[in-house]
Length: 205
Image (cartoon, rainbow, N blue to C red; front, side, top):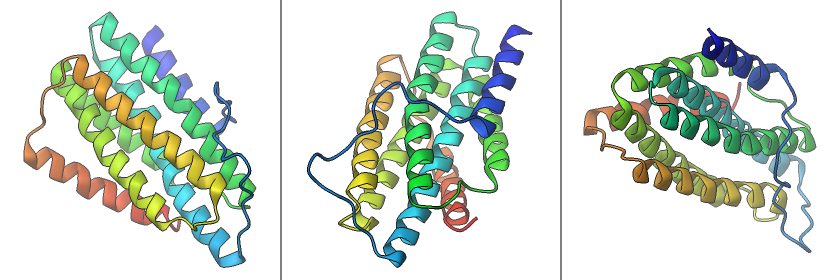
């Protein structure tokens, strides 16, 4: 019951509370962001997608922590979720600075990711960790694509994305070190397809 209440609290906090980062938001010293209106709109759409990704990360890790029976692995997932909270806060704050809003479908994204996390957790701890590895690898590639697409003068957004990318790579390495199993190719393909639907939709809604 305590774990269920904690999971419910995590969902409400992620979706409706203002997040506070434990680390300072990354910046590029000496570089001032100056954006035209169209560049601002484009950057905001990309950061909205990144914010959705962090909403999903909270849901995935919370569900996987709920599903495992291993206390050490549960602590691993909870610690990863806590670290991802920085990303959630940074992207939300950057969206506000850009004068835009988070995705209107965040409750839907959270619910879907939570279901995937539970499913991964029920397949066993090694496959659940493998799901983390593949998710983080795909997110890392996705963030690299955003670095290629963000306006060159949007130093504020780019600094955040660079730090997020480094953190996601670290989370993948930690999951590998904890004993992750390699996911089958069809599972990886399905994950990429689901991510494509989410990122395309969140860009606009």
